[in-house]
Image 1 (cartoon, helix red, strand yellow):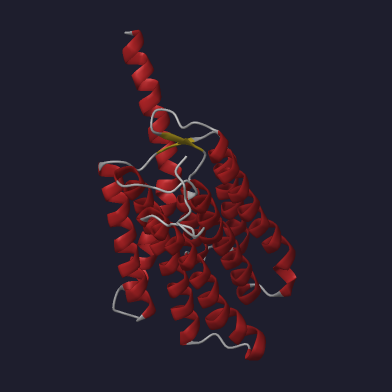
Image 2 (cartoon, one colour; image 1 turned 180 degrees about the vertical axis):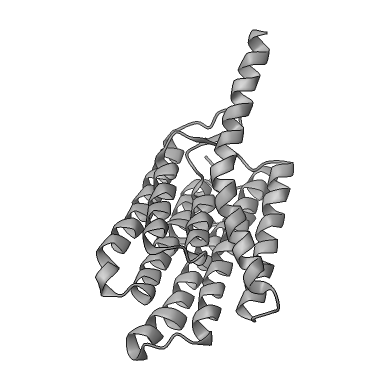
Length: 259
């Protein structure tokens, strides 16, 4: 294992570590935005003006940005030197940005949109997301990925799917069921493809496009509402379709081998 300490015991951070820590900062920034722009105004004077839209958009943008940092820190770690604590930093940062932040987003959505009457089911669904994220990361740390596939929905993808479900503004019960379903998929044995090669490029492009849609939505640009709904719907559709495609490819490969 590489020595992570400098001449006087100072920790050395690689470029990959800096990207990973940037992911953690994005998660913290998302929580800050949703608290100051959405929750605090709601609790103090019950307002839900323009700042709410901008705060929600900023929070989601930070989580999207964190997912891009998470995507590229692995690429940089493979190409360049990575410190011995890189894997631990990655899990801890992912927990902040893709476990705690989306769970908190769900709680704030429930408080602002449903009030105290719906607090218990909202808390249950939010805790489900958080605990599923913790277990997903723990399992990832002790298992070996095979054939370029993840077992269970990757936590960055799950976080973006949870946010998309909330932003779609579906009926309350449907939203909660969908959020819990995403939590289940994180700890399930359903396989998702790892974003490498062209898929990694497509993932980065998808995240960049979504950030643009969120900026347009926050600024109330013409057609931005439709763009946001379309992007969120596509994210949820991908979450459901990717494991089906992966299973089909797996069955087809087995059939070709037998043939």
